[in-house]
Image (cartoon, rainbow, N blue to C red; front, side, top):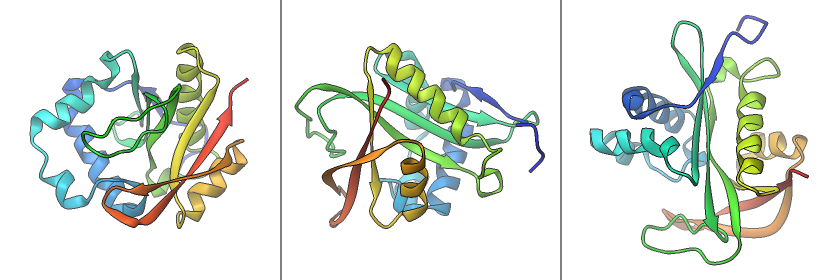
Length: 183
């Protein structure tokens, strides 16, 4: 990877649906335990689902950011959404509680990981979006076995809340909740 951060942060649109699909499938192949979506499910999604994911940036309570190289390769993503309380990640099951921002969809291409990669820029964009929503905490859920991700979040100021959610695909798998104060 070249020095000097040769990427830009973008907010994808519906027209980017093919690239959204591509990077999601690459991310699931690379780190399946980090996503609450199986590869076969992702690969089977129709075009309209991917277009809907691109429309997220038109919704008031949702953000989807990507890092793109000058030659057009997408090398990282982060997303966030506002929920009422902790999200359940289960279709049809509503969350209850105070309004909060949730970090999801985090992935950086292995060749672009590290201190000169896009991950900190993506996180900064999500943090700025969160504060623009009038919120001062950013929450996330990370698989307990994803040690690399947990270390990254801890180094960036996230702390465990002591709460867990279960992976909707497998009730025996736990996702650790972490939070960062943005004050």
